[in-house]
Amino acid sequence: MEGSKQVFILAGQSNMSGRGGVHKHEWDGVVPAESAADGEKIFRLNADLEWEAAHEPLHQGLDANRVCGVGPGLAFANAVKGRVGAIGLVPCAAAGTQMKDWARGGELYERMVKRAKAAAERGGEIAAVLWYQGEKDTFFKEDADLYGDNVEKLILNLRQDLDSPSLPVILVALASGREYLDKVREAQKAISAHNVVCVDALGLPLQQDNLHITTEAHIQLAHMMAHSYVTHFLTQ
Image 1 (cartoon, rainbow, N blue to C red):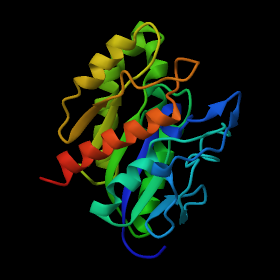
Image 2 (cartoon, helix red, strand yellow):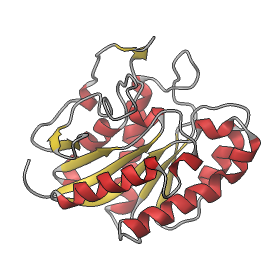
Image 3 (cartoon, rainbow, N blue to C red):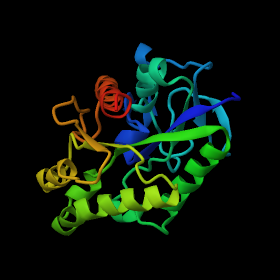
C-alpha cells in the first residue's frame, strides 16, 4: 500500500455512499464485475485514516451506521486505473444531508477536509472530487433556491482549504427527488466554476423507493463519470 496514489474524494449523500442492492435495510452482497476489488491498485481511506484494500461497500462504517451497498466509487476507480495508476478513494458521503449540512465549519465539511488532507499526507495526490448530492434539497423551495450558490461556495472553500485552486469536480445532476427536483437539477447543470463537469443521472434506473439508483445504475454512472474525468481532465 506504499507509493503514490491518485486520490478521489467521494462525497454527497446516500446515492454516493451506495444503496445498490440494499433492500429493507439489508445489502444483497452482490458485487458486479465492474466493482471488483483490486488490492494491487485501488485503496480506500478507512475510518482510522489508514489505507486499506478497497472493496464494496466502500462507505460501510463511514456513513452514520447506515447499511451501504454498491456505489459508483469502486467502478469508477476500475474504469480509470489503467490511465492513472494506483488510486486512493476517500469516502465522505452521508445519507440524508442537505447542502447547508456541508457548510464550512460544520462536522461533515471539516471531516471531509481532514480525510482529504490525511490521504494527501499518506502518499496521495488529490485528483478530483466526485459529488452526488441534492435529493434532500428538492423538498422545499428555499433550499432549492439556494442550491447553486451553496455548491459554488462549497467548491471554493474546498479548493482553498486543500490548497488546490483548480481541483477538478465531477458533479452529478440528480436522477430523483421531490417537488423541486427540476429547480435543483437546473442549478446543478448551471454551475459556472471552472474545472467543474456535470454528469446527468436522469433516466438511470431507480429502486422501488424512487429515490435510490440501482446497482446497474451505479455502474452506468461510474462509467459516465470516468469518461468525463478522462475526457476533461486527463486530455488537457
